Length: 312
Image (cartoon, rainbow, N blue to C red):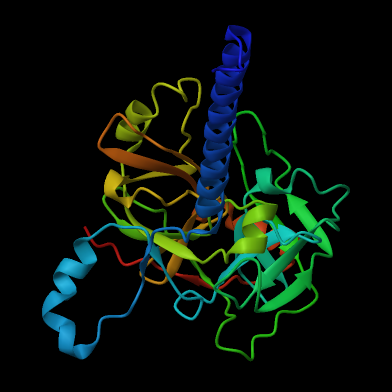
């Protein structure tokens, strides 16, 4: 004899369906949270930049031809510094040391600095990570090029002054600036860190990265900028470099130096992540044309310059 009426059966069945649905929703939520934690904590996929040993000389030619994103060491590029938020350690931009007191970077990274001071930012030098290690230096003065235009990015260059860099360590060094313009077909390295947020700073290190790129002519650059950058015009003071998409995972870090044969030829302004073509592209400024600006505001009689050896 059944004591449960039809209405009772319907209620029981509905309760079971509701329970199964709630369990399913809970499993989906747990799965999404687990996946989110994985995405936050997993390391950025990037090969480690190692100097080939003598035993691997036969592979050097191939090594130079692979244009990939690679994690690298500050000991290989001691001129590079990270510009980070003072309180959060969040990475903002990259710069390059040009004297005992001065760092060169792009102007649009410094628009938040007011009245030639920049208390909200700090420079980290001598570390392969932008969020830890090395030495922190307070920024005591900022100079943005007087003709800088935040819309067209013309004259996108600026200077940051610190008290004194500790040049007695291997991981901090003054860069050499090119005494000649950068030419098309040159092969170079661009350095920088990935864009980071507060969560990233807590869960993982932000390692210095480099990528090989080839300098292109202005005609090719302007053509490849079509689309999202139709209104952007390259000037003769700007450069453009491209690299194959298998270098994906790298970012064009604003202020990242373009280094050719150990000499700084340019600074990165922005990069175009191109999913529908064969190349990514980075747009840079040519520091050769800003030597007078550097000398004027740093009061340096001579800046550390060197001639780039042109290698096609």
